[in-house]
Amino acid sequence: MGEMDGPLGRAEAEEYASWFRALADATRIQIVSLLARRRRPMSVGEIVAASGVGQSTVSHHLKILAEVRFVLVDRRGASSLYRINDKCVSCFPTAADVVMGNPVPAAPACD
Image 1 (cartoon, rainbow, N blue to C red):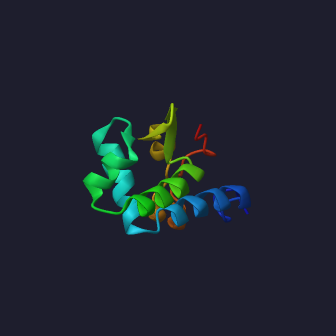
Image 2: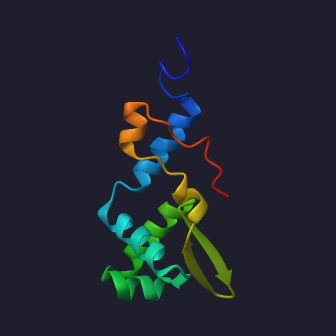
């Protein structure tokens, strides 16, 4: 069986699964979308104001998004600014590509 005939390798499958889990929430998708569209670092307060979601909820979701590196955190003194990780988002495969065996990005390099 050729490489394209079998399933994804376990490490790749685990990585993609973590991405899908991180995006399996409407609020997290809204936050990713907001940061991607604004194209600049934003504070938690700015994200709260734009999303209409409470501060503790936004902070919780940002933590999850940062764990899979969709969102990067820039610490500025006592505050933190959050920005989209363009490198990681650009290598995110669609669910259809993964399931259907279409070409998917190489092993993620989400630094």
